[in-house]
Length: 415
Image (cartoon, rainbow, N blue to C red):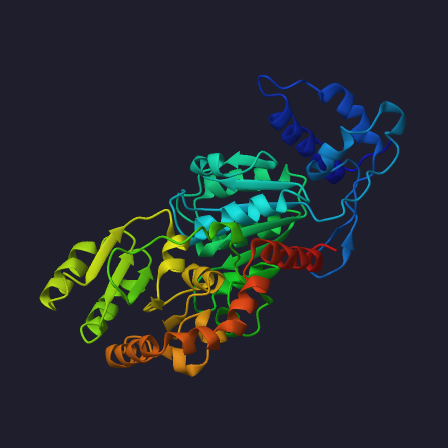
């Protein structure tokens, strides 16, 4: 068999990458039998950047290696059957800590693993949170976004995986993926979790998933797809009970400037009842001092970190979202599942669903105070008005709906 110099280079590179993965200590050395097979199986054509199909010479690419191992010796000449769903590699840059991005990444991985092969590239701290069906690759993406050694290692890893799509989560992982997209065989997609201006790097990926319509509308001209985040309905446990006499208003989130809890405390100065704030963060000391300055220490309660947030939401008379910015509010989704009315600033996703009478401009203390008072004055009316949105949430804000919609994005990218 005659092999061109270019094809021979590709062949030897594929063999070397394969040996790195499978000839590690504890791995069975399969290289001899694989070498003969590699010489007889054509390399599939690939699609170039201009849309034209390019022949790849001889040799099976690394991302097809694994399918060969399931074949018997007598069937090595048969092409492997195509998977029903695209094989996906999920990727996140940040180390794990309880938060919306981390929750989303874990639920996407675990939700997809039931129907298709899923790889996960993430910090080691994610491993305990992923189900056994997820193929985990511990990888440190905390270094600089343009670190050449890290990018080279990532290219090698992605080229060794039998994945059709690589899905990066949040801007850092998305930027890193955009830097290597031209060097890997997979289609590339990035999920943006917050409002952001369009960046040049976004044009280097094949698709952008936005967790709200507001984010998608801010990126004209880019290949965006709207997929709302989801929660597990089982998270909504039996309601807790507040020890304070109602009305009881609840706010949930990290105690950070972006969540606007200072605005909420200022607004609550003219509201009857009790305000409960669940969460921890760097703004706690300042917020406690603010409540004391406004004479609210006996009516504003800092609950700290809670692992029963759905139960707290179900027990509250009203949930308030006072954020200065959001991508997708999990608190809003939980409140809809718990059938608890919500007052929110004009942030996604409430601004895409709720009518104006339950929305207030960001940072407007007076408007927020008036809206809270008006809603608490007639809670039965508010609960009745929210009924259609409660049902909408049960259809659209579930993990099943999220994974179903994200699979459709993958099918569009890698049919």
